[in-house]
Amino acid sequence: LVVLNAMAAREHGAHIRTRTRCLRAERVDGLWQVDLQHADGSLQTIQARALVNAAGPWVASFIKDDLKLDAPYGIRLIQGSHLIVPRLYEGEHAYILQNEDKRIVFCIPYLERFTLIGTTDREYTGDPAKVAITEQETDYVLKVVNDHFNHQLSRDDILHTYSGVRPLCNDESDNPSAVTRDYTLALSASAGQAPLLSVFGGKLTTYRKLAESAMAELKPFFTQMRGSWTATAPLPGGENMSTAHALVERLMTAYSWLAKDIAKRWAVTYGDRVWRLLEGVQGPDDLGTAIGGGLFSREVDYLCREEWARDADDILWRRTKLGLFTTASEQQALRDYLKQMPALRAA
Ligand SMILES: Cc1cc2nc3c(=O)[nH]c(=O)nc-3n(C[C@H](O)[C@H](O)[C@H](O)COP(=O)(O)OP(=O)(O)OC[C@H]3O[C@@H](n4cnc5c(N)ncnc54)[C@H](O)[C@@H]3O)c2cc1C
Image (cartoon, rainbow, N blue to C red):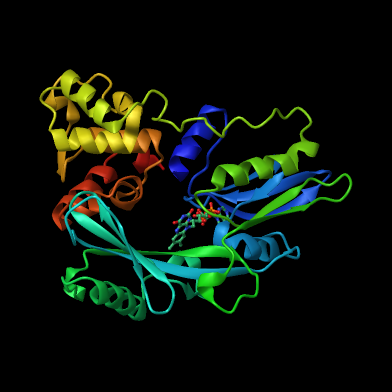
């Protein structure tokens, strides 16, 4: 979702700088002067008429440490972790398990072969970039599932885990599950000053509403700004889509030699952009090196070129979930392939 929004922004003229840190920013003569550091350590200073601080878990520390200003709200970091196990049950339905602590845990069919189970709510005080599932969380999730299903899970069934921290606006609630999931926008700008807009909290499901509200806050500073238009705008790849099934049929007609499971994965991962991935492909050889798990070098090249992929984790876990379908040696083959890519060698 994040990458698709970044692609859409790029197509509307935005400059996207991935792996670039904002080190500090200060107001100078009615503009923000912003110091950036790129992945290779090089520095760059840019000027901006407005600064939007959407640093998620770092929103408050960015204001305090990097802008040297006072944060208007506190942020509470609530960790949530998920388990992926081999498919627990037949059928396409999800289960919502009601636990005795009044929390719910869901089980969702995941990528045909797996079940995704989550989540937890736990106060977190460490570095948000280093969050990882704890022993207690693993025990908790396994117990809830084992209390509800005949099929009993053990730690040996866990194929993968992932964790994140929810950056929630601090409402002083005692219970981590009960902290508000709503967002708060904080605008700061005295007369003649360049505005700073900070986003506290928020959810993926409400991101377009949040973005519209953010633009409304900034409208007084950009009088040429036109009205909202994104509510029903498709994301890249969704423009000419009817259903993923119909796209698979079209792919199989155009490329009869293509394995159907790859066509299916591409249809749901790239939507209509799959035609761009396949541009110029005449036969199987044009897919390039077979890396494993249905991944070919052509897809890797596409992800590096179009979706800012830079390392194996970007490809195996962030752009796809092929990490679940590839062996350690196939993952190493991907690393070796990436190492010899000229664009990445230069980066
Ligand atoms: C376990 C869990 C379950 C969730 N479930 C749901 C759900 O079911 N539905 C739902 O809608 N939402 C859910 N959420 C919430 C959702 O994931 C978050 O609301 C969303 O990711 C917040 O997005 P964001 O862009 O504000 O922050 P983030 O995604 O955290 O992005 C902030 C970005 O800012 C960058 N950054 C920070 N400091 C700097 C700096 N100085 N310079 C440059 N970049 C910087 C970071 O690297 C990061 O990329 C869940 C979250 C978790 C953790």
